[in-house]
Image (cartoon, rainbow, N blue to C red; front, side, top):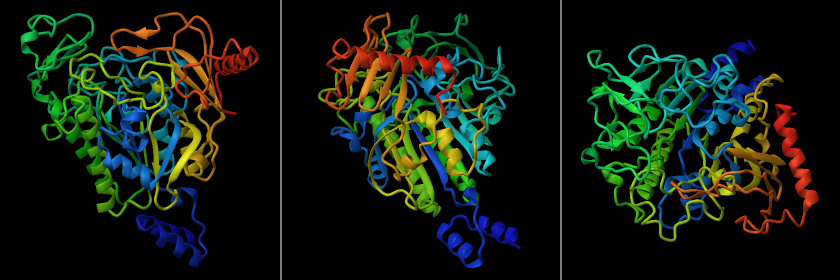
Length: 515
């Protein structure tokens, strides 16, 4: 009899208080999976800590993100696992620091899938708990195997690593192929106009940004001068697939529409949606209704567009009466970058806006601005609004979701993912004690202290003007008194440097940091 009642309760899962009340009256003990919420993970691209009103932005209106922050928990020490996109996404989905595995750097658009089918991922943990899983938006983790044919079945991909359905772009907006992929097929492909992709040689007769600048409406500042699609030159070469090519101005609307449709299809079951925005990544070509919404040019306008996407998802949850028992987590894959390859006035119009907020550096950097990002958690049925200083990392989501859904991870999976669920729910002021930060080489934050290991290479990435934190000597900063990382204390505190260096080396060589 209890199993019959539990089956009935699943059917009314959109009314969590009713379910709990009936269970209490009937003496039925609900499992962790049946008490757990729907989950929507909104993952912005290159959104800085200082780009959001709730984190101090004054010149970019972000009312929807601010509402999530106001009604949820705003983390001041939330980290991406890397200062660039592919390794952050790899760590988020696998619970393993990407620097442990060769081949997880920024991928070209024709790269093979870098997550092995069959391994435990964030999506498989949700699926094991009975969730319907979907991914919409930027993927950038590779697709298929070697020599992928874009005109046939595109596999392995998201469906082979735990997602029930997907609607994605293969890599980034500035990389070919410039098409959408639904599940395992290119959307809208004309078989008479097959797609060819190359990252080695241009296709004869196909224009490029380098050879045909007169065709461009957005010109590159560095690189990004290969295939021309929609008047914008990209990284890599592409021919064919004209009917399937995206229009940059419509991308945010297309992805948001697909995300909302997933919510509508999934309303009668528990679901996990990984909604990976493209904004404000380059090329920044917001829809005309957002153009001019800020004084910062296309980058600022693209952030307003991203905020509107968040608003549409929140509105859909409210309309579907799913809002109270849906955990919404909003964060970014890495810190901000201003000039990342196109002449779009982002530098000229930046003014006093500080995309990384109080932190030094940004995308590509081991300084705090590279990986300390917006990190918001909203779950009205469970999470009280507030601000948390707990250290949490995106690599922790696998273990934390396992705890949320009443599962125990096998010892050999998610080697760097820690269960920080009490911190994420605002039930504990503490999260991690230490977190590894990655941008080529490594850094370690433990409490108030930040250690950056010595490295060769330029101090500044000249094309993007990003400070990289490279230096031949160790760096030690007290983030409590020096959040801008301006006063290197390494020479004055050699014992602390030695302790943190040893700790980082142990994490590096042990193959895992999860107990």
